[in-house]
Amino acid sequence: MKTTDCFVAAVMALALAGCFVMSTLPSMGPPAHMRADAAPPPGMREACVGQFDGARLPLPGRHEAPLTGLCERDAEGRLVLRPER
Image (tube, rainbow, N blue to C red; front, side):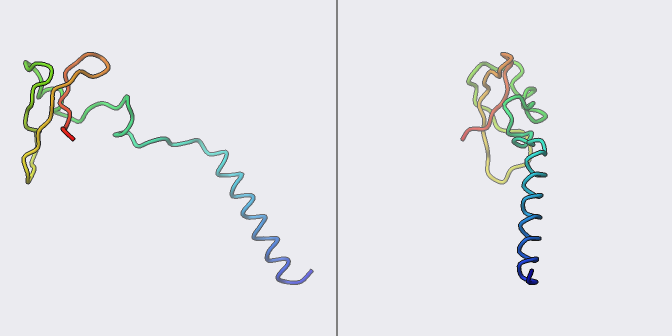
């Protein structure tokens, strides 16, 4: 075989091996903050204590522009402050 044929065969073998290895790795899925079952950030539940469903409140923390959120029910029925979009 020519040197270029050996090189091409080696590259193809490595590519095939890489595909096999990548297909056996577990899927990592979306980042934790984007999962539906992810817990809200600290302070988001506490901000809605004593509020009603749909209450508009300022978001806790330091922000240059004022941000607000709405108290909404999560999957467990608890009020959580969610940023307005």
